[in-house]
Image 1 (cartoon, helix red, strand yellow):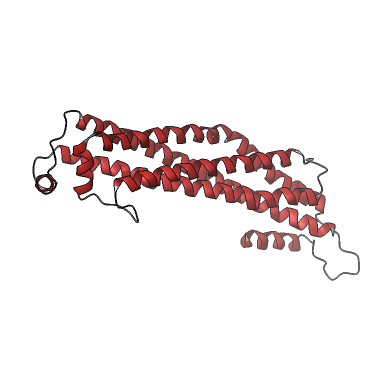
Image 2 (image 1 turned 90 degrees about the vertical axis):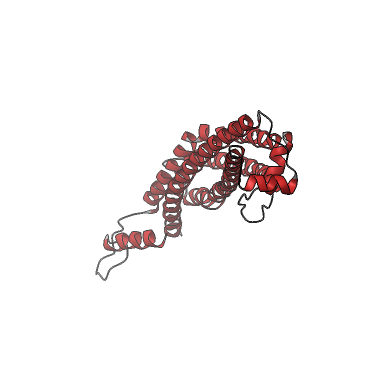
Length: 264
């Protein structure tokens, strides 16, 4: 924000908005009405993009529910086969952070999905609140005090909720990617007849895999990889929109604050 403020102040100064030594009264090059107009324009860009993204945001709810189905399918795959559930316990599968076993990974993902659903609801509410308040503004006669309220709300609540949603989705992306990695390891294990698998059999008394275990693992791996790719696309889209919002909101708030100062 500081570089933009510096540039704006420089422009105003060079344009004669700052009083210069003179025998006559300085002529103002800009007034609060113009500043309000600039601020409104940037807020209108935020509103336009929010409306364009509305269908995309609503699709998140459908996607989160679909992802829950994939996680449930993953859980059932682990539980349905004694061989797979035991293999997951003994195979050298890398885990991240506090996730030390598959049960914890599933629980963590389900918890993250619930958190993402709440973050999504909050973001939708703040988006709707912003649009409702923006639509009440007059494009030509809005007061500085009215515009600044909308700009501050966007700068604090709207951007905060967008950031929280991004973080919640990144958590899901991380844990689902880990699930996909685990299913790949299991798939590799089902294709081998020696090495670590044989050692694990002797240590844990693992039974032979059922004929359809490989099919279940392949289907689950494909589903997880697809969900992770879709989720990362959605996160990237959301982050791009949020960055555009941030720049427009930043400028809108600066102009609104300058307009308010001129009014005073």
